[in-house]
Image: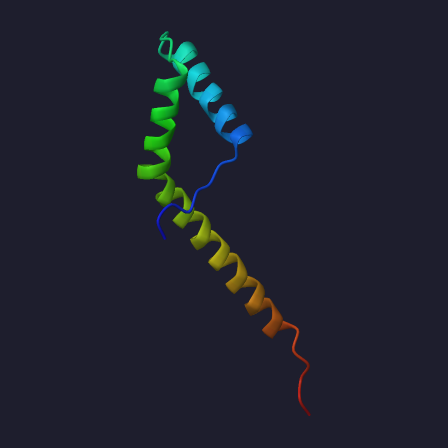
Length: 78
């Protein structure tokens, strides 16, 4: 899977704005649209798969727990 994280324009713009706000508040630096977009691209490419895989693992564990719950409600055979 090449890039499992896809953003629509609204999501991308909100994330860019969030990065700009973070840099302004925490680092007292102005981050332009281009720089914030490039940083976002880097985060998605380099860190995104880690977050994606963590979500897959959490979903897998959740589903396994629910499947185990099904065995708990089996009817007893006579």
